[in-house]
Image 1 (tube, rainbow, N blue to C red):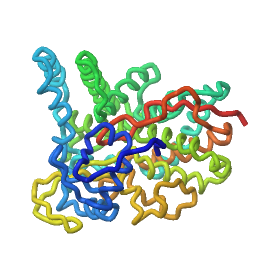
Image 2: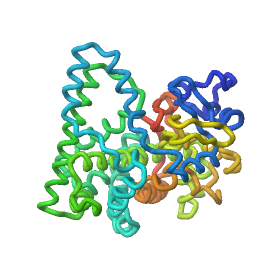
Image 3: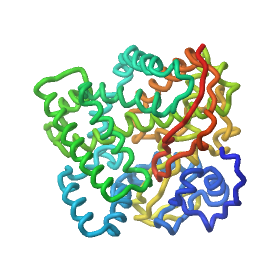
Length: 429
């Protein structure tokens, strides 16, 4: 959506891991969809898949395309370790050694292991549970707006987009009010591990210790709920028994699931609130059209998810020799599915770069994935978005970008698409 002139993108030059491409990937995605929709990229030795129909083919075929891509997610850390000074590396490994060993539970698990865990955690986000939360979520949204309604100008990410989902996931997990500041920092650090933002060695060591402390706190919370159950997610996880083994979740499994909840429960919603507000600022004509029209609001939220997918992509591993879209693939090959590219594929979405609050197939966007790995927290995220935007538009109007600030842009990340700050002005109704 940048208005600055750009150089033509050539397929041979494409490097998806280039921070500049990750910040503004749309021209690159267009070239790949049109010229090389299953594109081998030497940097990373990975095939980039960008067309909607091909992504759906992969997502439906879990036998041929495995989600066991855990090692890929550790690549950035491994690269840093190989280049860090020995004392820093040793200290990091000492801290990391306190973490529970990784377990494939949801995101990086294949059937039947995936079903074993997914069937249990789906209880947390049933339609009934999410519906029951609506008055409570509305209260948090209204209280948050109360906190900045008289200011006329705010960093929307700091004032609304971040605190609303964070408070909701903290409360639903059962985090006590006096422990929220620690939890908020830990949840933010957990998501930051998927970005390419550089930090000093000391800051990376500090963040590693925060993750150890957060792990110990959250696992301890689940174990405490087994003795003192309450109406929260940690109680539900504490009550889970894996039927095939007739046992409760162990600490590594608890942490694996909760760590994914932290990203699914706040990061994606925070990003979509931000990108959605930016869409309103850049398309002021739709602001009043959304007021009092719940159907249009729901479509708008799907459009925000489609146009700026908070999860831009995830890998898959090819399990056997096959072909995809006429491109041969060998067993062991790594694919990078680009949801963000598929969501702007004109073969599936008419006028895909435009926000259309009456789009008939907006709900088929892939921001939450599809198939058995469809985001477990999607019902909660949609509820927050569908309540949050009407509340903002019914109490405030004339949203516009505040002058004197840099052009809003994403943080570079292969996986996530986050908006670190968004300074907006508005008027009270």
